[in-house]
Image 1: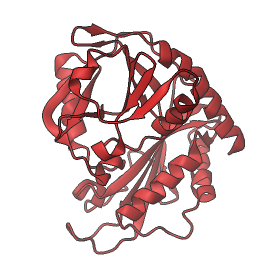
Image 2 (image 1 turned 90 degrees about the vertical axis):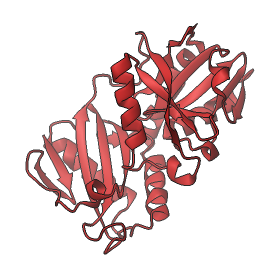
Image 3 (image 1 turned 90 degrees about the horizontal axis):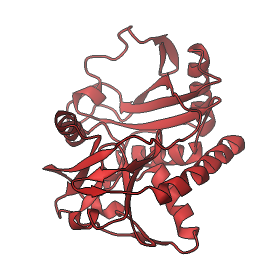
Length: 286
């Protein structure tokens, strides 16, 4: 497989990152995980705008050529080089400040890296296997704006992932310093109780997820459903009817079990078709 580093295609095994790469050195990087269908990224405009916003917040210099059209073409070139243009793929776009400096960078200019791999399913699907989660309480998510960005500073999420592996869980739910449930390791969280659907607010430290945004739009328009963006207490988890997680690659992940509580997946099943419709339209219009 080949990767795209600053517009140059090269084999994965070729060393292309300098030892002083700031993404490696101090986690000075942001990224987007994209689901790409037929060479076009799903919800590409939303991902692009989030990337630009994240770069501005981290005071990275955005090149004049770094347009939606330029990056979309770079993705297409990478997929074509790897024989993946006709397939549904996962693409990761990572942007990091150029090497140099320690905590204080020598420059705000950036490098970028594109990587791609094939996905098994063409569209978002719901897994019908067991998906058990547990609270991870060793470390907390900061409830600030930096936590809402997709940065390379993911030590908390990595340690939570190791905890999940060691204890046989599919995922972990993360909490902030106020003991509010914020998100999962790799996904946003939705809780369903009766006709009310709740998702944690960004002010609690939740990632500003693209699929989260899209489903909030859909749920907010559903007859008989009330959408609330508010803090979630761990005590609410076992009292809820349904929990599901969302991210850009897998779409919707229904939680089947948390401690002694077993969950249904009625709303998740209803939403997956709507999400696929939105995804197809975004690709057609892109």
